[in-house]
Image (tube, rainbow, N blue to C red; front, side, top):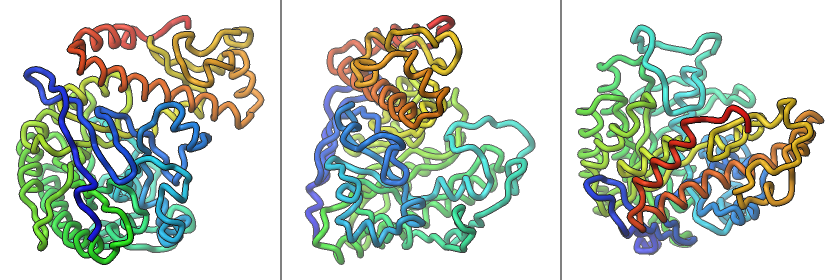
Length: 414
C-alpha cells in the first residue's frame, strides 16, 4: 500500500472567534502553505502560460480536470507518462476535480461559475436558453455526450475514481452531482442522497485502487459537500460525509465545498461547513477567485480554492490591480508606457507596458494572453499570500478593510 502518511494537514494560526486559519498541507510532491489559491490548468496546462512560469509567479499547486483529460488525451496516456505532474512538467502538488461540475454544465448549459442567481421559477428540468442537454443523471451515474465529437460516455463513481487514479494527482475529489439554484428543495434532497451514495462508492473504489497501485504515491481523496443554500442540507452533508468509512477503515482526507450558491451567501455557507467539519482536515472551496470572495472564504474556514477566472478574463484583455479590474485594450492605453501595476512584482509588470499589451490585443497576438495571464495569476496568488501572512501576524481584519476598500471602489481612470 502507498504510504498514507505522506499526506497530512497541520493547522497553524487561527482567526479569533472564526473558522479561518493558516496551515500546511503535505503531499508526496511538496507542501502547500494555506490559505492558498490553486490556479486551474484544465487540460494539464494553465492556458497560454508555461508550467515553469506558474512556479515562478508563486503558484504552490495546480488543478486539472478529470473530464477533459479523460476525453483528451486519455487518462491512460497520462498514467503511462508517470502521472499528471510528470506529464505537464510540474513538480509540485496537483489536484484533479471529479468531472461532476462538467456534468452539470453539460446537463443544463449554464456558465462555468459556482455563484448563480436564484431567479425564475423552480424547475428540475431547467436548461439554459439556447442550449441542448448533453448529460443525463441517474442513481448509478451520468451518461453524457462528448463536447468534442458527440460520442457517448458514462461516468460512475468507480469510473471517476479510476480516471483520477490514473491521472495521479495528489488530491482528488469524490464524484458528485452539482445542482442549480433553480432546482426544487425536493430535488436538492434527492441529489444530496445520491451524492452521499456516490461518496460511499468512491471511497470503496479508492481503497481498492490504492492497494492495487502500490507503485504510485498515495492520493488523498476529498468528499464534496452539496446542499445549495439550505443550511440543514449543508450541515447534514458535512456530518454524514465525515462519518463515512471504507471497508478498510479509510475516511476522507479532506472536504470540498461545492454546489450552487448566491455570491452574497458565500461566507454563510462556508461557515456552516466550517462549524461541522473536523478541524484537523483541510477544506477546499471550488470555483472562486474574486478578492472579496477570497477574504470571506478564508475568514469562514476555506483553506484552498481554485478558479479559472484570472486566466479567462486575461485572455479577454481584463487585468487586475488593487483598485479593481480594467480592460487593457481600450483606446486610452495606446500611449500609456507604464506597467499594468507599478506595485506588482510579476514578470509582465517588470518588462512590459500597458501600451505594448494594448498593441498585442489589437494585433491579435497570442503573447497578449500570456502576459496578461501571468499578471492576473500573480495578482491572485500574491493577494492570498498576503492574507496568509496577515493572519499569522494578527493583522487580517486591518488588511481586509484596506484591501476591500480599494477593490470595492473599483477604478475609473487607471
